[in-house]
Length: 263
Image 1 (cartoon, helix red, strand yellow):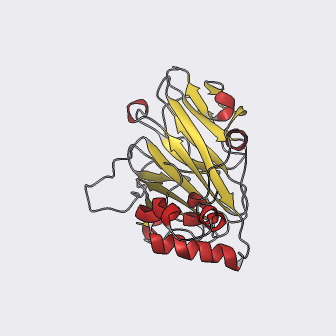
Image 2: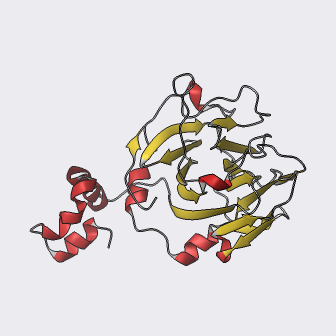
Image 3: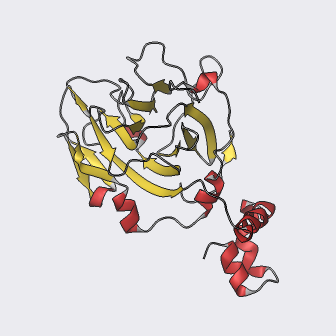
């Protein structure tokens, strides 16, 4: 999904999105996605953990990708190397639609969440230690066996969003929310009430030889910004996405042009 701006599309107990139809983006998300992406080393440090996944999963490329071995009657998960307890974080998951099968769940988990079960299931979100979005069924799971799970995003009866290969996961530990974005549109918070935990990127899969990629897009701490930085945000907002490429033509000093473009 790249570094692009998004359009807008707690309690102590994590609560599904249908009770909170707020589509506004988390504060700082547009800024985070406008900045240059982390380098390869940083992305690998935030990638899948080869020591923290099902035995049926092989982590590749230093953590940027995993492949599930074709094992029958097994659901297998993987957790990221880094856990987040503060700040705003975003990462992209790339999962080909033809490799998802009956249960393809994307979300977050604590270090205690199980990563393998001997049957096909929506493993992520099936217990109190994980939260997930089934991107095939469009259902949200937390302490859930699947029955009565809320639809996400909330849509008219019978309508379901088709999730493309790439989706963005947005974890805001300052507000305690987990949400998702596709096609440049933030879909709203899926879960709330996540403060006080340390949460890791996680997925669970059932399709043999599926490959799931992760790309960490960056994090942002909750702290005051300089007036110079706030001015940059105002200028970029005034220009809009379609005109950012024309910054080089503005009658400004080269250093200011580079600053506006995060160069």
